[in-house]
Every structure is written in structure tokens, then in C-alpha cells.
Length: 355
Ligand code: SF4
Image (cartoon, rainbow, N blue to C red; front, side):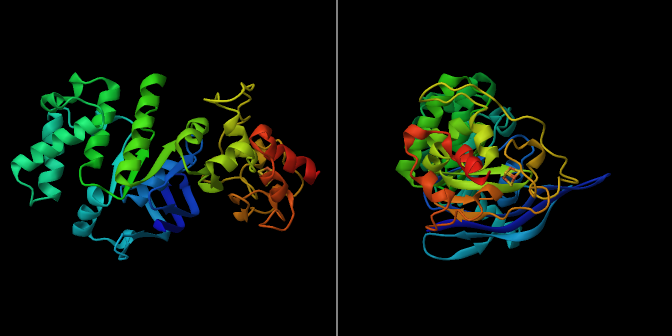
């Protein structure tokens, strides 16, 4: 069952030289309890999408179209974009919490970690006694691997990894159904990063919340996500299970992202990267916005924007996959048969079949 349903969402930033279409016509579901990875280069729209869902956008950003539906466990629903100030305060923390990349920026530098957890509990759970709040704060800190005596510490007294763990503890304070994590481990070294990712997986198992995990590192997402959505030029261009994207990426951009970062497991591959730079979102290229950078582009790619269409294991917006729908025997069905030993074969295979 979906806990969040985004439909046709658009976000523009107004600039002196025109509207920047940061998110365009995004439709995406978040299933209850899943980890959904959101991948893409800087400027692909992934953070703007997350901020729109959390109602954290500020001018000059503005939502121009679409809807966001939140569904509670008891079956009641909330139209997130229509929440008034009071409802929004209840929605944030209790139902949806956000962990940002730099905990140093999101934590209050002049308040102890304990005071910051207590603030959230005091405001959003007024029935809890002072003693119960103190016990909950200690429990939360210990749950993310920090000794409870750090409750009296200030953010600058903690390491980068501990600060990020403390930010996660605050996000967990009210048992939200959704936690959005925007590059939460990017600034950390690899060992600390892996520890925290492991911890997030364990916490998800224990508490059952859903996670939207944002990063440009698709290889890392493969490790922790149930499903992954890949964004390019403000649009979702591929979404599927982590396994489907790992074994047979169907969009050339997904394939390029996979070949831009070393894999955490499996055989080493030459890192090729993606040629060129992301487009100017004031006037993205016509047709498929990726066509100027796509090594599989062919006549027609610049004429018509490919729709996000179902394929085995997910959905993809690429003309190479047109006709690869569910069960029609097209390229998608054959790619589905490519096992783990055929990693990386998807887009190449599709390209050969199209030519
Ligand atoms: Fe490349 Fe064409 Fe597919 Fe776009 S539609 S990703 S240009 S092959």
C-alpha cells in the first residue's frame, strides 16, 4: 500500500531570465515501509521534489501543478499541498521528518542535543512528562549508536558522523511514517557512511517507516534501496527495483550513472562517467532532454519526449524501450531474463536491438 502518492508535480524557480522548471510532471509512489532511492546529478530536481513533498519550498520556488497524497495507517488521507499552517506543523515530525546533508546546518549550534530532541517532543507530544521526554531522548540517542551522556553535548562537540546520527535521532522522535534523507551521508568518510546506512536499514526494520533516500551515488543506492527512481532534467526517467536497475538498467542515463561510481560489490568496471553537462532548465532540449549526451540517441529522439512507460521491473522513459511493455516479448522481457551475471547489459542490449 502506498503511504505517499505524487501525481503530476511541477516546481518552478522564478529567475530574472525566466522560469527554471526544476521539477516537471513527476508521478511517483512511496510504498509503506520501503526505502525508495532518488538518484540523479546535481540539478536533476531530486532535492526540489523532496522539499516540495515536505512543503519546505520557499520563494522563488513555487509548486505549479500536481498533487501529493499522504495515506495514514488508519486509512485516512491528507492532501499535503492543501495543509494549513497548523495541520502542516502536525504533519512534519509526526508523519514526515527530514534529515538534511549537513547536520551542522540543521542542528541548533547553541542548544545541546538533549534540548533539541526535547523541543520536538515537548511541542509535538505535550502529554509526555519531563521525565518521559528525558527517557525517550536517551533511548533515541542510544538507538542511533550514541551514548546517552552526549545529550548534554553541543553539536560542535560531536564528530560529523555523530552529528548526522543525532539528526536521525531527532527525525525518529515522533515515530514518523516517512523520513526524507537528503544526502545524509555525503560529507562523511566511507566507513562512517556504511555504518550509518546499515543503521538506517536496521531502524527501518524496527520502526517500519518508509525512507526517501536522495543521493547522486547510484551504486550506494543499490545497496540500501528497495526501489530507485532516477531523475534527469526535473523528470523521472526510470524507476524500478534496485535489482532491476542493477542487472539491466534500461535508460542510458541510469547506465551512465552506474558507470560513474565504483560499485561497492562485484567486479570492478572502468568508470566512464557521462559526457557533457546537465541542461539549462529554463529551456531544456526538445524531445528527450538527455539526447545531447546520450550515446544511444538516434533520429527522432530530439522530436518527441518519451513517456514514462511500464516495463518489467519498473517504468522507463526512453524510446529504445518503446514496445518493451509488460509481457509483449519486447526488449524489456528479454532484459528481464538477464541474470546477475549479465550486469550492465540492459541499455546496451536495448540499443543493439533498436539499431
Ligand atoms: Fe537516449 Fe533517445 Fe533514449 Fe533519450 S530517448 S535516452 S536520447 S535513446
